[in-house]
Image (cartoon, rainbow, N blue to C red; front, top):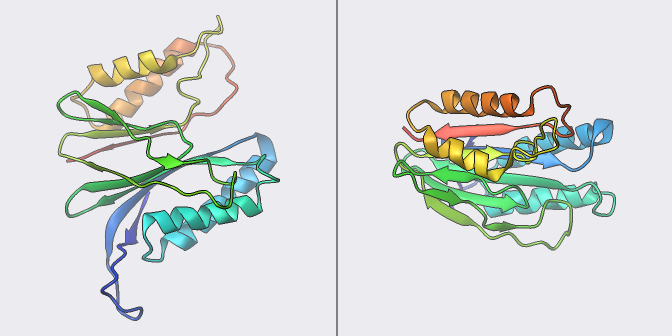
Length: 210
């Protein structure tokens, strides 16, 4: 999560561009251990370099996909990712879902919207095209971006935490801060899995519009 300059075709290359958008990214590399960790480290470095330029979100993702394809071992080492930009003035949200678990935009009215627009995971095909989705991010709304380690967390009986528990939790708690709701989710998952050893890690990003 960091600020980046807004893409503005009316500005010349030598003109200063002030940060106007908040970029949110959650990514998950396929695989385990050192190779996956190395790929994630280089992915993060590339992301920071590309995001520093005032390019549209679609071009940012296309460049990252090109890079991922060069290091994907023929598509075996792909990366799912969710990218979102929030305009700090209007709170308009633009996003691309590259094969990631669809994040949930929970409205203050209790409506839950899945953010699915996008395309394939990064590193699968160099000619992939990514659709760009959009939504209003209004006061009181919560954006929840999760890796699949949440819903696939298993208890000692081999049962998964699952989508139904996740949605029920998000639907029942709408008064706390983003940090409090995230803490509530982690406590719920921990209580569910107990002492069972997990096969996947968990990454969560909660953002509330205020």
